[in-house]
Length: 524
Ligand SMILES: *[C@@H]1O[C@H](CO)[C@@H](O)[C@H](O)[C@H]1NC(C)=O
Ligand SMILES: *[C@@H]1O[C@H](CO)[C@@H](O)[C@H](O)[C@H]1NC(C)=O
Ligand SMILES: *[C@@H]1O[C@H](CO)[C@@H](O)[C@H](O)[C@H]1NC(C)=O
Ligand SMILES: *[C@@H]1O[C@H](CO)[C@@H](O)[C@H](O)[C@H]1NC(C)=O
Image (tube, rainbow, N blue to C red; front, side, top):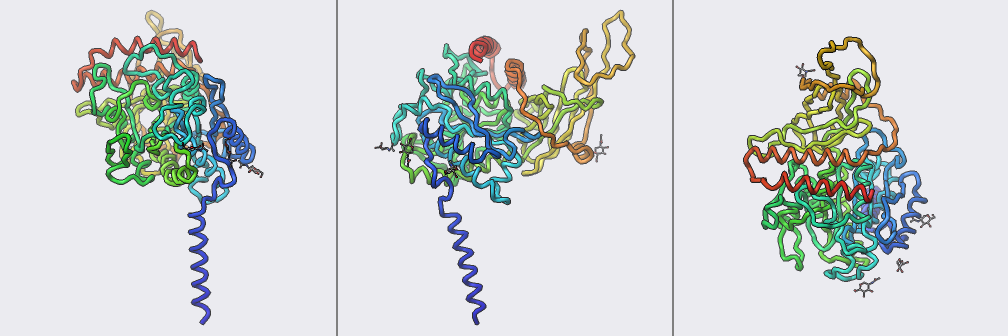
């Protein structure tokens, strides 16, 4: 007769343990989670010491008032990123009064570090499959002036020079008038050049909605209210934004902040549709190959009630973690020379399946391989074509099938093209083996042979070795140059498709681009 009771007790204690585990705010309970600069600096150093095998503390640069902009790099291999491991980033407090954003990202850092111990946890899996960069406070100078508890006050929103960092980035669509790039902005630009982040979330407060690019509108349409300005990767952005909103418990009609007096269905909105702004960090990230969304997590700008902040963390935890998980749906791989197997850096990649505008199926954003020939891209499940191009090689078009939450690994081998000398010199026949990309003393006759590969045969036959390599740097201006040209080409194609009138653009962009180079040369 005792058996059922024993069983019942077991079930009850099991449930108790489970519920206790969920309800108890186990993380960070003995730690003073604060964004106040000195205390936060101590906290981050303590964490880096206590968890030195799974976190690396760095500064991405200094602010105008010489504070460090800290980043915590969380991964099971924080000093050596394994080949093809994608990088994901979180940035808080681009507007310095967003205390809740900084708080939630500190809690995320502590949570990841503490959860690494549990073998089967999602957190550990994320740390084993991606490299997570967390910048809790991009604007510590602003935060020092912010008023704790002030829900609508603008104090601390800008940096020490009164500049809104969120709109201090170079804008590809329009010339910005005379605003100097701030040290914080330059630090972020450099950081984006050093690391190719696949996905990024900028966490802010003062709004409760998830925003996706573009924020900026084309020159002559500025302040045309309520028009969305969508990227060619709108399907991915909507997926990311919806994932965050859903996992954070957005009601169908979205959250409503009294101050904003506006509804956002499903808790998401396009930046330009809501509030057109020029030169935002989110747009800049996208142009430079990172899919960044902006998550507004609290109507109150600088909430300081610990209980409310704690609740904000619990509400946002799943959204933050699942956005990292989204990096698993898409493609990743390496581009190699088909003879030497040397990685091909700066190869140009393009998706061919997305119909941005009817009859304009060529248009897509392009992106480039790393120094190790690596590439990543979040893509929606389905069949796509990947086009890979590098001067001196035959262009490859790869058929790719993407599955939900299962990265498609690709190994793309490019064949060198036959090089023809200028007349009257005859064609050079001798076969010279060159392990690195050859330097030609003469113009290459270009080349558009198309090679078809099947993605399925690629990684199964020749698995990519998970070599340990350190991060490599990019030369800054070539990348900017590329991205600029990509977008420009894309816009021209849209223009040719007759969808919009873009007469002003060819004049506006080059001037801005020149200014942009000057700024960067002065600052970087
Ligand atoms: C946490 O740090 C802040 C900022 O330094 C300080 O004002 C506060 O008293 C600290 N709280 C505790 C509980 O130590
Ligand atoms: C670091 O470890 C020490 C010693 O175990 C502990 O007292 C402290 O609370 C830890 N700090 C953090 C931030 O985890
Ligand atoms: C929190 O905000 C309230 C209201 O502005 C303020 O009175 C209080 O001092 C703040 N608490 C802290 C710890 O800054
Ligand atoms: C690709 O796959 C199809 C169907 O399995 C096959 O018929 C074709 O020969 C393959 N092409 C290459 C280049 O391997």
